Image (cartoon, rainbow, N blue to C red; front, side, top):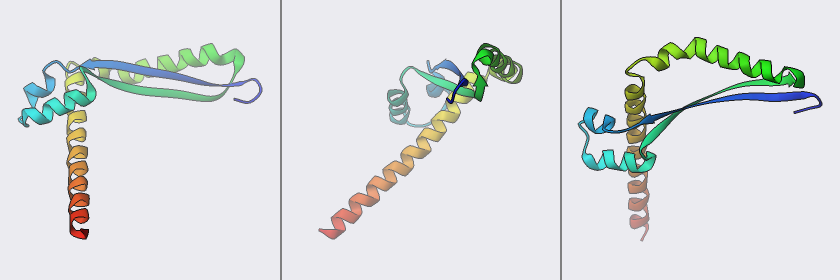
Length: 118
């Protein structure tokens, strides 16, 4: 950053395998589920970034350690819940399907407008 100041970031990245979670839990068409799996691959990634600005260079290690402690004390119980991965995957799937519906509706509307202009 400036002078003897640093930006300290902690990136938490938790892979969540999708083996059967969506297929087992959603009554949607298999085509929709396969499109989701094609888009995301075999796993999702829950990511969280913790940041500290203007940290003196001599305090970088302690700031990073503090960010790690804050994360574990605030989030570990939530992330260790047995249903966390499944819930996160299903939430992501629902958000993705809604975006896909909007994208497809937009594409259809644009195509219809282009046809009407011809």
